[in-house]
Amino acid sequence: MNETIRNILERRSIRAYRPEQIKDEERDIILQAAMHAPSAMGKQPWHFTVIQRKDIIDAISEGVKKAAINRNIPGLKERVLEPGFHALYAAPTAIIISGDKTSKFVYADCAAAAENILIAAQSLGIGTCFIAMTDIFFSTEEGRKFAREIGIPECYEPIYTVAVGYKACDAPQPAPRKENAVTILRQGDGSVFVAFQKNH
Amino acid sequence: MNETIRNILERRSIRAYRPEQIKDEERDIILQAAMHAPSAMGKQPWHFTVIQRKDIIDAISEGVKKAAINRNIPGLKERVLEPGFHALYAAPTAIIISGDKTSKFVYADCAAAAENILIAAQSLGIGTCFIAMTDIFFSTEEGRKFAREIGIPECYEPIYTVAVGYKACDAPQPAPRKENAVTILRQGDGSVFVAFQKNH
Image (cartoon, each protein chain N blue to C red):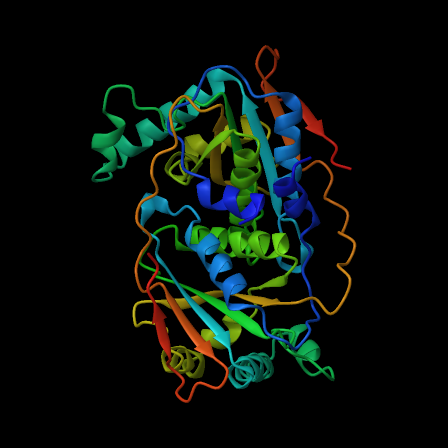
């Protein structure tokens, strides 16, 4: 197994971060990785807002909390009311990936960029967590206003957020992979439906 | 720059493949990488159909061609009628990533899995192309029937397809990255909106 595949397999969602900031050169190479994701028709329909200010990161968490309470989302409301809740795990850096929603495959493009951030960071020993939950804030009127205030260009909307920082915890064990997630159809097999492969 | 980041930056969409099949162990490690993508709430709402049969791969291309013509999609119709058109570039392997559309972030989850396939393959010297266009076939009645015939489980729908194989061409140069794709908000900066970073 090579180093790249090892990084892919060993990446975990990290939910506790040390307060010190990552290095600028680490941040910048992670952003380069993000921007080298594939995109449909090469449109690169994304914008990255890198937030390295605790006040803004905390404000996003508060926005998520308020939105979850106001919208009374079952399960989520209880979670945001837990002591110490922080939607971005108080990471020192948050990268908001915004997309041009007129671009047909913008969710795929932005998620591929997010995955590149996760893997590049892992290769540098930096923790990340892919957070989709911020959407419940950014989809509100207040959240949309906030997005403009932090400089997200007019034609882009926040789609995903990635928390980034040095890990303050060991990487958790991976959850077991789902069984029967793969069907393989091989040349020469007689029938169309051939095999389930059990994935440990 | 480490090997992982180099693989992320050097990955390109490959549109010509050698006919010989990739090795089973290459295919299986690529699938492991796919299944180790993050997913919202750890749901792993995906199914992978690995097609290594030319007849089925060609049938998908024909399905895309027919759908593009029937639906008279501007731009696309002309493209599918070009001589030698193949929606999957006649790759020896195609991986259909299907998702459980009742899972809220299924597009993100499946795209992250796709990106892992691309990067893992790149690290093995194997070419890939992330193809969203197959959707125009699989979203038809005929396409849905086809999906069942090739063993995609009932609660999953094809979302993305990845062409996989040994490269029959040099990797193309990357398109220039979009300028002004990043805003950085740094601790200690006075204003909220701080900087555009020009990305070469």
